[in-house]
Image (cartoon, rainbow, N blue to C red; front, top):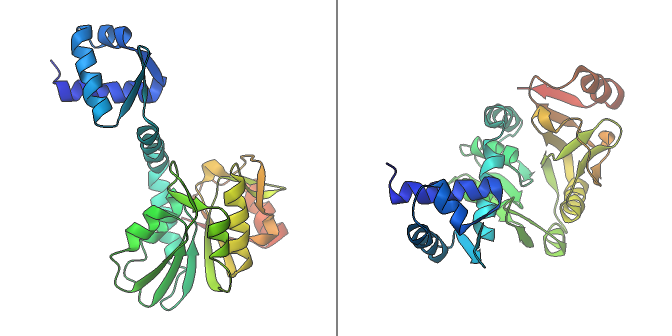
Length: 255
């Protein structure tokens, strides 16, 4: 028999999958009385995990955001770890770099902690926290509006923070890479911020697992000629290798 804590954790997982549920249905699913279920839900609501409305239960916005981000981190996790390690080898002590927010660029950050005299600008809250205890790394955190599902800041405040800066390298996270359009994203503010990052960086390095290659999105970040290097895994399609390397002179690093 499961404990009350285990049951409450299972309720959260159920809501993450099904989005919402009725109290009576949850009681039947977990084989407890409605009185017991209401007690569980009261506990979860007071802790900030769920919200109740007219007999229906949903995850709170913060909990939904945390679960969504955790799922993004875990997806293709081993590939992202290898990509992050390979990309970090492109960084030298004394350089200034930008790390775009993202789960793959977070893996890059994890391999930079031993560097000396390294300046890192980022719009990723988790990236700044990851590097906060690295003694040889100085961090500039961009401001702006926080997108909770990605822990990324964007908007006019973030863009204005880039004025009068110049960086050696930009490590750019990828939402979608199309053969003819280049890098794209579903988020207009982040696309605009990424373009501003590109404008002040000497070298543009895209980092992504192969699941993003071939995807289509709405807002253009940069065309293929705007990428200097692509760090990815060994499942990148051959036609993209030929297109990027042979036609657009993009160096492809396979981890």
